Image 1: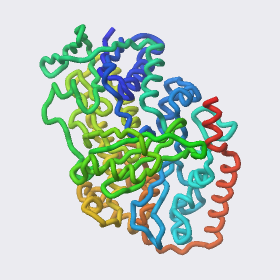
Image 2: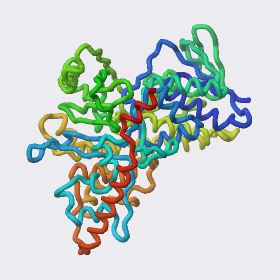
Image 3: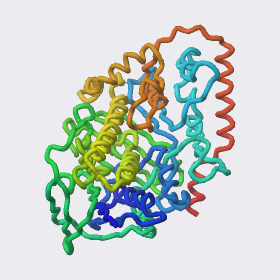
Length: 499
């Protein structure tokens, strides 16, 4: 039986361990899987938010959703509210909502075309006219009804989750399922002929056939195998620093079922509501703003609630490996790369990496073609996500300082995106415009929420029946009313889990 050694715990280590163990060892043992982690290295846990596809990971692992939520202080997330990403209009702060919800279907034109032709952009936001999630959050409603089954709801949803507690939860579930666990600190990595042969700790030497590097930005294993193996994205995504502050709740606090991303002077601030506290932070360009000034700006943004709360400063490497799999070593999670947490893609990328790894490890012949396939796929995932995050910045009309002027020009680092934006001035964004990409989490529907939320509308010249437009609108309003009627208040649902 072959051995897999995962070096590093946290979200990446334990998600990878539990997935590979479920895939390879559920009915018959094919691999001995061990996680080696140090008890003195903290988990980064910057964003604590997920995309909706993480539900399918948890469900596939056979995890009980209620138990997961209770043990990780989780809440539900139906999307992200973006504020202040454009200049104020008529004295009002700009905002739009990016939900996980797919667009409504219509008889002839798609719902985006209906919304444009009906000139509804003059009286409502795009998200308000095409999905129910926007209306749920206005009434502080959860994505669930009383009768919703585990991992399903009235609309798609993700979670706000405590990253430290999630890693502990997954560790318990993985070890109960047979994953071996060693607590020790790596002191040396031995390599030979382009592969890792052993890892030394304070007390022992560990050998394996496959080594998985989950050591975060340090890349303790993968960096031993190849120099100059990093592609930086900081030319177009310069936010490489963060300061985080956790604040408490009062009895009057309403626990939001969505993430809040507010643009500040040199980046943006997140607000993520867990069941027991609110996680806040400021992701910013470290070349333009000092740590001290960033903390002051974040505290001013939070207000009185930040008094007496400790700030945690973080440095981030924005980009990805040129090669994720070298020899017998594969980098997963932060060791492989990081896209700033604007769309909460951290756990999503770990999920993709673990799934791809399971299929690529299924043969006894792990030749160079297998490694090339994995590297190509993972590189494509990061490049696709890079483009989507740049979209959020390059559409801004803010020009109040060097950061936002640079943000407008970030599209120049994504030529294919620039071409698409030109096309999308004359037609709606549709599936085939993005087909052939490596990540299916953000499709044409997600692009539309950002494009139209940021005012990048196409100029359409179509003659349409007014009655048809009214029928579409009436059907949408009816659907929204039905969903809102069935939905359980978010705070009530979270309170029930904590009884």
